[in-house]
Image 1 (cartoon, rainbow, N blue to C red):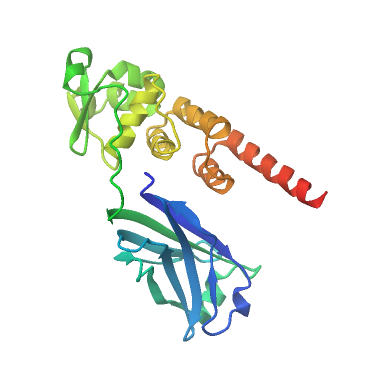
Image 2 (cartoon, rainbow, N blue to C red):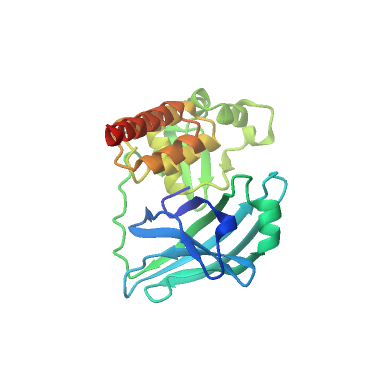
Length: 281
């Protein structure tokens, strides 16, 4: 998952006390230089849920998004997916009648009167924003590396020339793919699906000992490392997040939970505890 794809989550409380037309908001989160949050309200005996973005004047953001809540017994979910264009004048989109209020209270609100709402956002186009400076690859895996490789991995429209044994030595996934008794193991070119090519480039760079981890690339690298079961890269990302990253504690905790980085989780919780103690002393 890249910086242009993220999930907003909020545990709203006192759901049973919300009155007609009353609105509540999640805390703001920054993604791609824009502040985002979740808005919810009670409208005509229904729950309304919206994704909000503080889009600067003269700019547009096209997004695909999915709103989801899960029942208290985890057996059912209510969700909707759609697309929209967010602008300075149209800063929020969503569903004013996402679920009827009675069903919400009976089946989805937790016993402590709280409700978790999640909105998965994928930015498909940003209009009027400064163009991103193209990242310069730290290592080539293109045609110039063909003579030093024995397999081609195709990710969307990019081809990566790599060595089977090197990847297999770091990843059980690739070990099974290349050395197992599968049809793919005999192919000279293998397509990898559901992977962002730039994230895969950064993943390979880290695997080949390049210093490719920074606050812009770490999430994508973690996503690929998790997909291809590469613990050595997850560990490197965790070390970066603990020692060098400027990301906020909330974002670090989310990454720690998503990718099972217990060291990062402990560091974040310790920092929160220190802050709380300093406030109360």
